[in-house]
Length: 276
Image (spheres, rainbow, N blue to C red):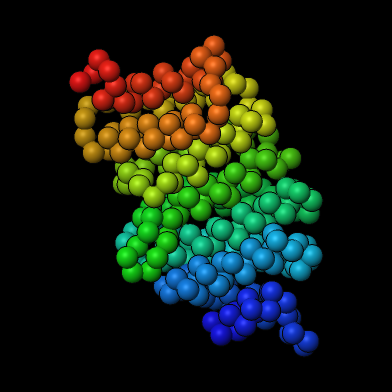
């Protein structure tokens, strides 16, 4: 912690005789530390500064090595599927620098086909298998796994390798997260998740009809008998569509996507006019 505080004060520059790999090894070791100052304020920010803010600090070889560790069973998949313990910090804070590496690759591709496929598989698996969806913890600070994973998926869908099949896989993972059966999101996860689909729409990564059909599919939970699982799916999907609606800016009721968003929200909203 003392070393990272000093590096922060010195504008993330290393001193003579120091090398990035020595610090990266320690940062990976403590990436899920329960102390938010170390995990979030120092390690997370240092990764950002070294990977994204100044992309010249870490070489492509170093990024490949970093990605291999971040996606292993001791980091992104550390105790995957567990709930209510501190292991969520390791997983949720491993996916953040993965997203930064994806961004670097998106801007200037350096991963080969096999490496990209491994990356894609890892991110989709993580988003499907993460079960600890708590946002802010009174002891430990931010976990925010659904939001952190969404940030990485925003970058993934924009990679040149992400064809229509990948876009549809991502949409399926998003629906699974919204219909998680565990957690109604309350820490603005809906805003972060909506960025994924808004990016697909804005960059025309899928035909509008396919996205509209997927949005309509989100509403099927409203047809199920009332119980906790369908309620979680309905509320999360409703809030997601509202976030997407306002991210879209000016809405045209004649547009197929905008019509699907409005119709979806109306179906999911049990307090809409005429339903009370």
